[in-house]
Image (tube, rainbow, N blue to C red; front, side, top):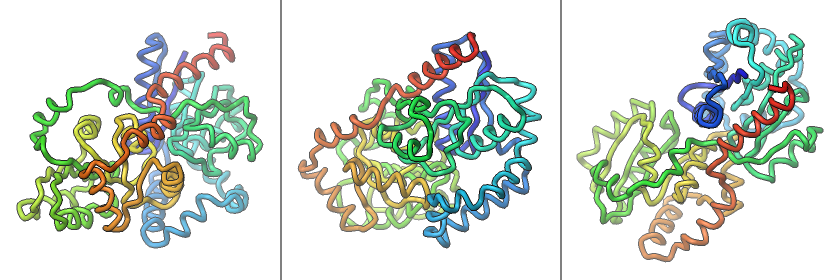
Length: 376
């Protein structure tokens, strides 16, 4: 059996989810041939640049408009013809360079863009591969729903209803959780890790993140925390945002609270293990990784689109905390410091949502369906 995993951008939660599924498949079914691809390597480079520029301009300048475009069923149907033309234009290289030579029995998509391309290829080329959708957020937008998708693996039960309303059969839906690397579930020695990262054992540790690209108000939050006079220390992950990293390093010696400024790192599991509170934007993978680590999450900001929906869901479930105002940030930290934060209650809510073995469950579900379909 051959399985193709498709994602968008190496520095993304979609890629980490694809990696987690790949690791699970290799662990459970070493005989299966798995290939993982970033679809941007096989698309129109001009189209990619235009999409990137439009996306970042929209979320910065008119985030309300991007929210409207992303969540509107009306826009979804009105742009049907345009999207069909775009898919034909951008799917040829993916078909010619990847799908045709590899000839997979299963295609797994962790992002809506490869899903629509593979749905188009499957329909137009009359192919019979098992098309699998694995959304990596806590809500769905209209661009996940295509009739020739064979199975959806969702984060939680509440997402099933949105697919039902779009006419997707519930027989195609399984709830397994968002797949993350098994390393986040491994037992580790917290004190030993604190020594490794050379942080103090007697201070409350706050992990500041802005996703893989270091987005969000990280500099403003550092300035705010620095002026509070609280017994805390900071671990600041700037991702691929080298400008922000340099900016923070220039003021590091002036900060009154102990701080470590890090760029892009693959050791997020260790940083989460030694932290007491995560302050971040609510990307689906980051949220899931933190909750599996029993790490409370404060939301600093959210990007328009899916992250805004994640924020609404997590706040409603009282799993995350809104920290967009300084007084909210101070209040939450004070609760941790004076012992009034009800960690056990929060932990119970978080554990109802996340499924640490989601990647393994997704892998098993996919192979079982493929065996039924192809008799492998």
